[in-house]
Image (cartoon, rainbow, N blue to C red):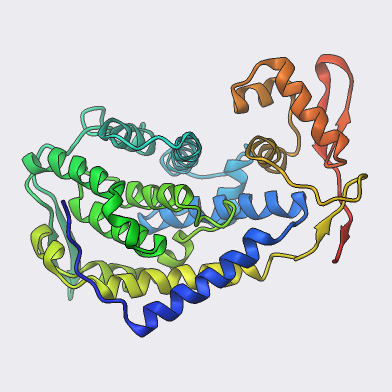
Length: 355
């Protein structure tokens, strides 16, 4: 099992206290359903754009948004496939998180396969790396090895130990932000794949934030902070030149960086939250469950949803899905267009009443 070394500094303590304050505000806010789906989609676009940009994807955030909305853009097939893969992977980990099952090594391999599908050879996509791996940076025109991953034969056991450690009750004393920061650091240090380690690590970070209840209603994207502070991100990770050195190093600098980024993103998000109440016909606040938000996420992304699309999203019987859609219509959140099999559901604007 891993035994990370770090210190809860006054700065870390202060950062976590402020994160908790912001989390309480966001959790308690009863906001417009339309605003909530906008924030979730905004976070998705930021995550997809930022995480792939870190790895060199040339698409702008506006282009990424168009790709996710099914619109055509002029770009290489590779760049577009990388974007679509990352969105599929995000959807996959969100479903996994909702199922509340512990991740397995098989899940990690499947996640990597989704991320790298059609980007790596079949021998590398969804498979542990067969040999050594090095992280190389160019300094003054010369390539310098910054980090050497653990030997390939150690990888399967290390990942298995990592997953057991991540779900261990021994970690219950760690604040979730610190635990997820450690999860990020340890997994990327294992560097289990020939390529795609960074993207897989950031997706796992999102998964553990969601399962620990710290994804701020699905509207938090830390990847944008990593992109904006890329050099500082790499420096914070570089606490040793080998895996074993990293595991025995003082991880306080990385955790301070991680918490700093978390706080910055959470602060920005809180500025978008309009604290107020969406009042229904019964004069009570409207609250939405995960199925309703999943349907609204799709409507905001593509402008409308059909019953067939809703069935595919929720994996529920058609009759049940029809009832869920009509509940959103009755709540005055969606409205229908067309009739019969051609019926489409679109967003309907709500009125915000401040308390």
